[in-house]
Length: 415
Image (cartoon, rainbow, N blue to C red; front, top):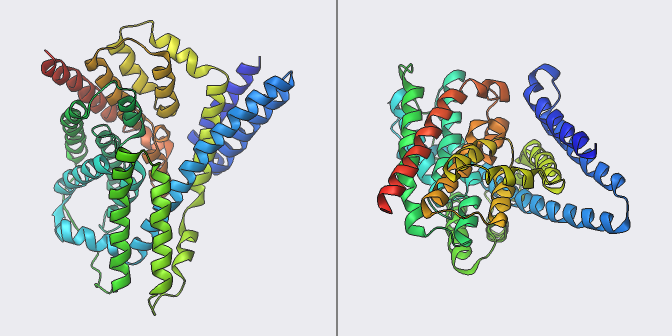
């Protein structure tokens, strides 16, 4: 009875996201409310002090994960808010992309940019920077929505090829299931599937677009902070791989350095102190993450994820991996992957690579299935849960192609 009620709360949270345009109630408010109610229910239903202590420990663990993500997001978004306000992202676009380009070519270029960027840095940073590109082009609402969907899929796809790109890839690697050289192979199916989606989205795209011209009025301090941002990304990867330092710690260090540099050398034309750029972070996105992760933590606590692990073992791993990826569009892929690793299924290297691809890319099938999707939904007004559904057939096709190619190429290499 308790489990049914809690699962119902999770379903209601999903429905509140789906029908946000009808109810006009912010999804961050509904998911946060239902997420809190679910944990309050768990505490009320506890029948002994021992059970209460266990639930308290689980909640603390869940809140630690959320706090880590919050701080990481806040750090990244503050950097991007500053660079965007200074026009640095637009200047980057004008340097890399031509001033005028056909919509079809732009689709391919944006997909490739997001794919490559997400391979070397985390999905959150890659999504924010890639979405920043869209603001520099004069796109209509439909094309901007398509580009945003492509960015979500490309960011999630690029993240599977290196341990710096996706948490689930890192988890599977640290468990000793795959090697770096084997993960690099995943870049081939990831690239082909992203290219396919870009081609599909560009079939009816006509005409050309131009970048929004801006004057290079930046100052020395802006370039220094841009360099600090890039160095922070690089050091996040290096320190995590060689010393196991959590990415959030490195990014907070970079953010604090940004504040110190800004304090010592502040632009005279700057109207607000650099520290106040933190106010430009969209806390709706952070609250939405908080609500979603509270609900996922609750589902983990009541054993729903363990049930999925049992179902996983009932079928051929190659089939189970495919549907695990589909399931990650509804459930956070991190606890899902953790549950599977804890169950210790006996898989071949090919099957582990298939699982790595599926849990990394499968979240793209729904907009709430990945951090990239949630961020894009908050940044692109035209992109909602319902409007995203029209792209699911194309996304599913590209996911199937990418997963199939992963198995084929992996089998060929390990013959």
